Image 1 (tube, helix red, strand yellow):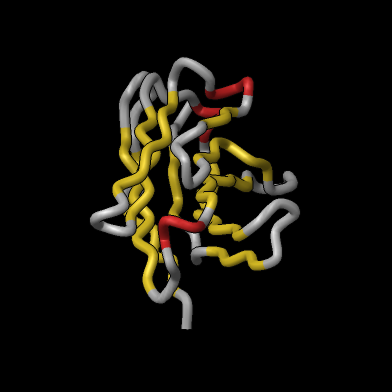
Image 2: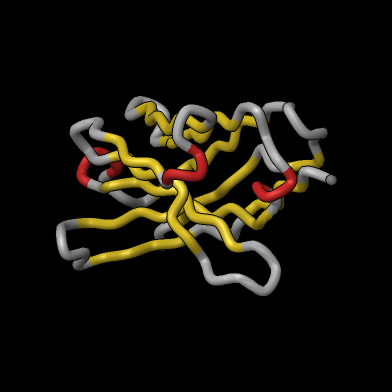
Length: 118
């Protein structure tokens, strides 16, 4: 059974930083595009950042210049470094793994809460 396990969330003051991790198991990690999504209360889930198997990255406009996604193939782990956090970054952050374009397989993690008080 595929597992994506997020960690690193928490409470951080505005302007602070957090690094989220997503450890993948039981997938051929190198084949998958990895992404971070978030869902704030009362809002739809939205993409934050993604990184392909080749290392190409994309970011939502709202996080460009503040967040950075990376992957460590030796550890089967994808990271999201979040700097200059704002209250509007408060959400549950989810890790996603997709295979192919359009995706033929999609897996989600259980999510980790990030809270930035106003």
